[in-house]
Every structure is written in structure tokens, then in C-alpha cells.
Amino acid sequence: MKRYRIGVIGLGMGKSHIEGFQSHPAAEVVAIADSDKERLAAVAEKYAIPATYTDARKMLAGEKLDIVSVVTPNKFHRELTIAALEAGCHVLCEKPMAMNAAEAEDMLAAARKHDRRLMINFSFRFRPQSYAMKKLVEAGELGNIYFGRTVWLRRRGMPGFGGWFGTKSLAGGGPLIDLGVHRLDLALWLMGYPEPEWVLAGACSPIASEIAARKGVPYNVEDFATAMIRFKNGAMLELEASWAGNIKENELMETRLLGDKGGLHQYNLNGTYEFDVEFYRELAGCQYDSKLHPPVPECHNAQYSLMEAIVHDQPTPVPAEQGLAVMRLLDAIYQSAASGQPVKLG
Ligand SMILES: NC(=O)c1ccc[n+]([C@@H]2O[C@H](COP(=O)([O-])OP(=O)(O)OC[C@H]3O[C@@H](n4cnc5c(N)ncnc54)[C@H](O)[C@@H]3O)[C@@H](O)[C@H]2O)c1
Image (cartoon, rainbow, N blue to C red; front, side, top):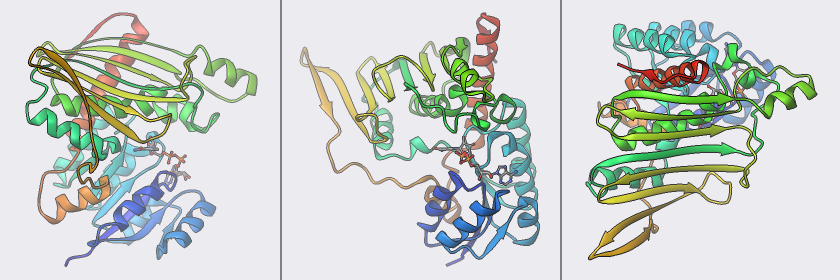
């Protein structure tokens, strides 16, 4: 069996990329890069990675890699993805694909130019409950989906408060681009990525900005955002994301889909990253609720899924075109929030 040489850039969430690739028999994580020397050494030791680099470009030049994961702060996704594609590698880039749609377009163009795969890590698709939902939608059990609501709200959950996540020039935005992006992709994927027509949105930072000022740390992104998206097929999707909000739950994730035959609801359990799915419909004039019962469908992680696609010459599990579609929506949401006006797409 051909062995694929993998490199991972950025070793926070990058550790889970190492684990994901190491779960596939044809993948070998041979090199890692991180500008933080201590983190680099600790991760190399933990996962027995032979080559380490503080400069990712040196890794790309020296290692003849087949696949590279880009898992750095959002600001560096574009430049490192394009550098890896130019070095002849397939790329798995973390979400959000980029800081904005213009950057994402550059990345997609580079992937096409160099004829390499570019996948975006919308990791919440790679959950058994998400697979189960997709199967139900594809089996036509929802009928025509005319409305969705997709949400990730935190009560007080600013990641690395005072670090790059709250700095617009490094992150591109706040919880919308960080958390909302996952729930947006999940809903769009289940709805078949319909073409958006209008966006009306709002964003603000009533809580986190005040905490940051008190702590004396930089913070210049929203802590809450909401949007209503209308698609050309007439369907509507409501999106909510927060890092701070006066709600009961510490962490609330849910995605609802309403179809004319049935309705689906995925929700997290007790503030964890574990999920359940319920399905609602009318049968013989009565209303029924049902719940996904174990065993849930088999489901691989994103890295394993990309490996399978490469080894068996199958389509890329999350193609860059969908990452770009999400970035265009995020741009429109931020634009609408800033202007107070609806934004027309397409
Ligand atoms: N898919 C998911 O569920 C998920 C979860 C968490 C984070 N993420 C994404 O992963 C990315 C990283 O987030 P994180 O939480 O790991 O952040 P982090 O700050 O914990 O880690 C980022 C790492 O990148 C390193 N780094 C920064 N610039 C670099 C450069 N130019 N070259 C090499 N290394 C560099 C830093 O030293 C740090 O170790 C972000 O895009 C984030 O949105 C995705």
C-alpha cells in the first residue's frame, strides 16, 4: 500500500489532525511545524513525529509531502494553503477557510491551478448524528425543506480571551466566523447547499468588549451575531452564534430542519459535544416523535475521510467550493450587520 507523507502546520487543534491522520493505515505524519518551539517539541514527542520546523515553508521545501493540514490562526490560512498547494500537496485547511471570500477565491484558484485537493475541516459533519441526518434527508423523509435554524451559543466562552481569536486582523471576526461557521455549514450541507439570495443580519459585542476593557486585553470582534438567509429556492435559514450571552446554557448547539413531510432536530447534550437527533412527522393523522437509537451509523473523522477519498479516487469530502460559499455568506452577514441593510447575493 502506498504510504502518504503528511505534514501538519499549527499544533493547537493540529494535534487532533495528527491523531486523525494517524488513524488511517496509509497515512504517515512525518513532519510538523509551529512557530512556538516548546509546543513543537512537546507535540513531536507525544506523537513520535520525526521532523519539526518552526518555519512551515522550510517544511514544505524539505519534506516532499503528499498532504498538509493548515491549522493556524485564520490570518495564515490563505498564505500557507497556497504555499502547500504550490509545493504539490493536497491540503486540509481548518475552518473558516479564510478571513474573507476574496482570500478563499485565491485558495480555490490555486488548488485548481495545481490540480490538488483542497478540503475544509467542517468537522461537525463527521459525526454519526450528522451522517444519520444526511441519510434521512437524502431518503426524502423530510420532503421539501423550507426552513432551518442553526445555532451555537455560549454563555461565557471566549476562546483564549485576549488572544488572536478576539483580534479582527488575525481572526476575521468573532463567534460568527469561529462557531457559527460550523453550524452554518451543517445546515447548508443538509439542505443541499442551496444558492443564497438575501441576507439580513446583526452583530454586536455588548458583553465581551466590556470584559476585555476591564481586563485590559484587546478585543475588537462581535460576541453575538444573527442572520436570516433567504435562498433562491424560497427556503429560509436562521443562524445564531455567540461567545457571550445571558442564557441558561453554557454551550448550546442545535440545528433544526423543517420539511413538509418531516422535521429534524440535532442538539447537544448537557452542554457537551455529544449529540442526539430527533425526527418529527405526522402519521395517519397523528403526530409522532422519534429519536436516533444506537447503533448510530459508522462515521470516520475528517482526516480519515480525506485519506479514503485520495486512496480510492473519490470526491473530496468537503470541497473548497463549499468553504468559499460559506465565506461569501459570512462576508454578506458582516456587511449587512455593519450597514443595517439586507445584502443581495449572486
Ligand atoms: N474544526 C474544529 O472543530 C476546530 C476547533 C478548534 C480550532 N479550529 C481552527 O483551527 C485553527 C487553529 O485554532 P487553534 O484553536 O488550534 O489555535 P491555537 O492558537 O491553539 O493554535 C494555533 C497554533 O498555530 C501556531 N502558529 C501561528 N502562526 C503560525 C505560522 N505562521 N506558522 C506555523 N505555526 C503558526 C501557534 O504557535 C499555535 O501553536 C483556527 O483556524 C481555528 O478556527 C477548528
